[in-house]
Amino acid sequence: MSMSSQNCLSGGSITITRPDDCHLHVRDGDALACVVPHTAARFARAIIMPNLRPPVTTTAQALLYQQRILSAVPPGLAFLPLMTLYLTDDLDADEIKRARDAGVVAVKLYPAGATTNSDAGVTDIRKTYATLEAMQREGMPLLLHGEVTSHAIDVFDREAVFIETQLMPLRQDFPELKMVLEHITTHEAVQYVLACDRWTAATITAHHLLFNRNAIFAGGIRPHYFCLPVLKRETHRQALLSAATCGSRKFFLGTDSAPHAIHLKENNSGCAGCYTAFAAMELYAQAFDAAGAIDKLEAFASFYGADFYGLPHNTGTLTLRRESWRLPDSFPLGQDQLKPLCSGETLAWRVVS
Ligand code: NCD
Ligand code: ZN
Image (cartoon, rainbow, N blue to C red):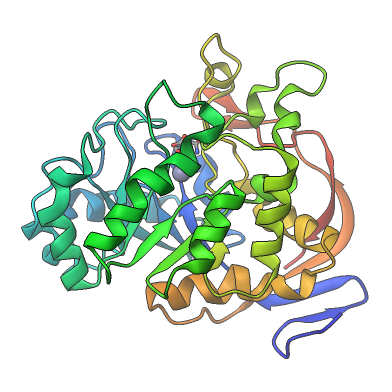
């Protein structure tokens, strides 16, 4: 196994530069006190998704939301939430410069109806072209939930169809707009991103590296494995694992950790989203280790995302040790309970400092 100079693996432990989570949902209100400490214990920074109710559509709202998140960071932990705006059909192009000047790092595109809290999302991408032009000019990245919403398209095909019918034409119209295809789940997405130039990158979640769609149906329906884009078949998981561990700068860490109260997951119409923030680095370490590529974890988790966003690398380190431990069954989430993915199961890696 080759070892980079920065990350040292010795005696079953690995020390890496403190990582960034480039795609995270923390919600708002009481939920912040539960989930923000989990992320802040592992990550130096996280890119915070704007799909609140109502969504974060102005710079002023993003800055207030950032303050609420910072208030939930435990004393002694240094954690910086990086804010995003939610793209709507009528997000004003003038808002982009304001956002950029205030340190907002990206704008997120949810096709209307694609996922949790996406009702206010984009109904037709052409309606947003003036805003996308301002983004291209300002160097403001566009983050994409890359799925079509048509019920005529099989739910397992929605990412591949989005790439072909929406993303490819969009890229032609905006050749130098920075784009991140978020939480990719398919071989087609990997191939597309690899073939693109430096303006396109992708995030990959720990759960899409660890599980295929069988996990949703193992011994009965398992709602905690349901997220969007939904887990795909094994060949796609293998393609994602190769992408994450091949050393390409285009793929970086984004957990898409998405907390929902237990009763909303274990429900007649269960919400999409897996809660992974509590053990995020441990889950990624497990996936990379199983692929014989633990030496590739540091760049994926700590360098490539920062580089794409033009951010400095973090100072400080995170050490994980090969040690089994059991994930809690649940956490208090305001008046509710939150079940982490793999709750009650034993993991092979543990963050020790
Ligand atoms: C996310 C959520 O719950 O906010 N859910 C999910 O399944 N990933 C939204 C999203 O990123 O699609
Ligand atoms: Zn997400």
